Image (cartoon, rainbow, N blue to C red):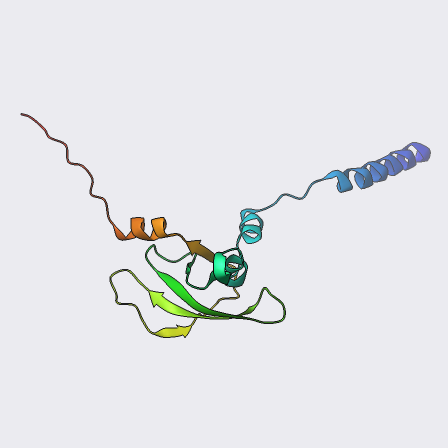
Length: 132
């Protein structure tokens, strides 16, 4: 009887250690989002002229809010640095040249001209004609 319980215990331990490495780690939405987002400098290096003159916005900002980048200064590690630009917000006049806050955070995106124009124009819904 003791040999049977010992054999079952050894079998249970061997199966438990075999199954653990085969279990794949599930990626959460936060892991997927974190891997796709980039800081301002990583986005800027993909653009012509190093991102100078382009429109950049944080992913959680409202449409129509963005910085127009005027200067970028990189540190030795190319993924970090300082950036300056003019903040634009829909319905408000553009501000002064200022240092862009949070440029090293991973939440930046490039705003294309088409996206900037489409966010500034509001389309009206067509009204239905009802004949009584």
